[in-house]
Image (cartoon, rainbow, N blue to C red):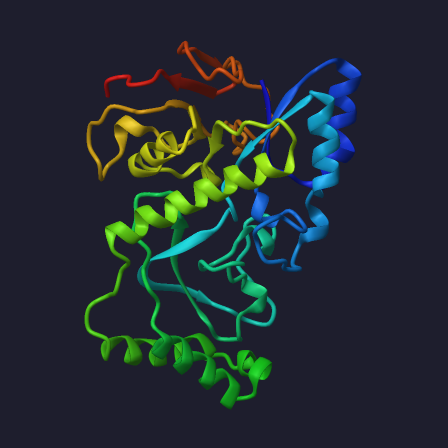
Length: 309
């Protein structure tokens, strides 16, 4: 099985003609909240030109060659701990492929690095679907850092040799006044995951006539027992990712409510699922049999519904 993540322009321009030429089919896991002019979400500009439009997605859908499924609403991360990893600087924004695939906080649309003021702290992050509750960043810490940068020349501040030390000191002082770290509640975490899954599914089904979205690929292959359970409740029958449910360090043994396809890192550093052929049979009725293959240190396998951990 061939799968493609994200919905890049190259899916339509390069992959689709080759699929037609060789009589192949594929599954594309797309990010509907980032597709230009998506229904039900606010428009935004960064990186839209790099993604397929709904018109292009519709053409591929109607051909029957590409099956479109969900890769989450925004492919976004959340802050998960109060440890500051880096700051927004003039010459460097944190990226995953490109800035538009690395929103750093939730919203509608989410906040992207290129829209943040210089000096904004960026904390330890992970996928919204991972095992962590969102760390609720402090306005006081952010304002202290961005005001320092603005007061000392904006972009020129970063020409100082000790600029990071200055920001670290200001952030540390502000953090001390806050006491303990503030996290979202378990209820809010579950609600955010459910909303993301539900909206991503609804938007794709609304945009593509006759479409049923039943399969979900975790952004960055990072999932959790809670995310998998909620996806099943929302009508998904399979999850794709690099996280192995029975080995979840926080949830312990559990019974998977959904079929899993786990993609492991290859010897070249790439991942199955990024346009690489899988040997796991995939169809609209869901995954039913477990299969395993190994070639050049690449492997993938699926877990049947309710497989004991």
